[in-house]
Length: 366
Image (cartoon, helix red, strand yellow):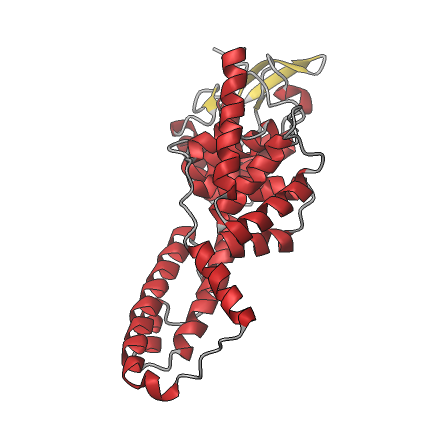
């Protein structure tokens, strides 16, 4: 008996090949083999665009032999892949194991079919989107980690301490992070090298204390140096940020909140909202506002990523206001606010307090 399994369709604007592209990019996150992805590529190629519209049947009835030839796999592999995808609730077989597959269309729509139905796959489009975002995040972070690992090897080598390089090579013998394809493994290597560097740099600093008095340069007592030192000390004594990631998400502008939602799924798996999610969303929002990446990196270097993200959030939200705190150019306001925070400190706490009060007043007056 044919099962007429319809579905709710893909999100507006998404094509079937964009859908497949997400599946392919999120292969590891979804736990799919390369063979399974090759199978799904054949499956989607055997459908039509209208099959993915809400309320329609999305199915194909290509024989196992033809699927195997097109996917460049053998029949036994195809049988195993289909069984695995059925077990994962990604496809449904509407034909019996030994019956001939077939189907028909009426006015472009599938009328009846005995084959493989893709409705369960389409129903999980939100999960696949989240997995694709996570894959994109991990790809970007993997490049950052590879750069960090290379730098750590250089830093450890420059310590000129017996055993430091040897300890580092025990973590990664070939010193080549490009050979590591697992994101989790890259994180483990970076963390282990950080520990090696911290341990041996601490040993080096302890060994230098006994003769520092012989090699220390004369004190620089110039007015300029004193001012710089005082400003640096003042920044170090800056009060801690008086907010949480969850509160930042509530205060943020709608475009900023949408970016937070994206990274919340990809980074935090929709658990407790982390500062990492806020920071990544802020970086993307800065790009949308026309803030150059070099400017963003400089501000992060001066203030730290959390305070830089908060400066952006306040400037962005204030651009939507209609009172005396409204700013016309969020990017320019962000730069000015970051400079004030770097010079004087505690500026962002004051502005956050005002913004929280403003939002609270609007809610109470609603």
